Image (cartoon, rainbow, N blue to C red):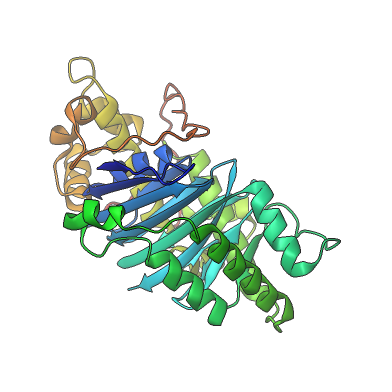
Length: 373
């Protein structure tokens, strides 16, 4: 649904979409300018409700995720700095490996990679500030001559009255009942919101500046580094079965250390992650393929699944449908609910990588990563 309401010299627009598929959630994120890949880490059905409100150079979003374990990886919108506000955390929520609670908030700046892990259920609000506005707010709190943190770092905002007030104000911008959107939007007061949000953010950053924040946990940093390096190794070799010993050797740690770091960061074993990543890759190819030119067998082999019975069983258990049903699905798929256009520049788009490299079968070593449940 797309609603537009004239308010002085501003033209607010509101977007709402009910989503029942991880791929739809990823497409919606792309329409907002995110360059993200969503990876469903555990079996189950995804269900989400996404809201977006834009006016006066600001963009607000509210996303209600009800899902199995979900990993989002990619880049933020290039022209905006997102400030993410967890409103409700039903399971585990991690940004860049850092656990967040409902008392926290986090701002991202620079060209840093976004690495988000959601388990079970979460409601996340976000404020998208133009880069120049974010810098002005930050320097209002820290001083005009203060040096900005290095690009690629996240700013955790310490929980406190300002954060609580900021979350309450942002949450009040969105309706409680999607069935009464037009009535709600007609009564939305937008003229004072920009100033209120700015003042709350300045106060939040000032609280952060004056707080005695704990020093980073060195062991936690090592866990994060090992897990992310291992993920990068598996991503580079995503078309083939792999062994933990190979991954550990490239990361420079033992298999035991690798398993501990990976479970601590992602909540699942590296073996399972690699299998799920390849299943998701096969699903993407199945949905993009022309059934007249491609087969389930071809795509399964491309992703290193050479036992078709086990592949179909694992695929059906994880995604709730057989691979034969997914084949060619994107060509006929329509969004559930109404798709609202987002007029802002969507930023960089995801580029499909070539899948022409030959399949290689690696030797079986200590712990094989191609073992399907």
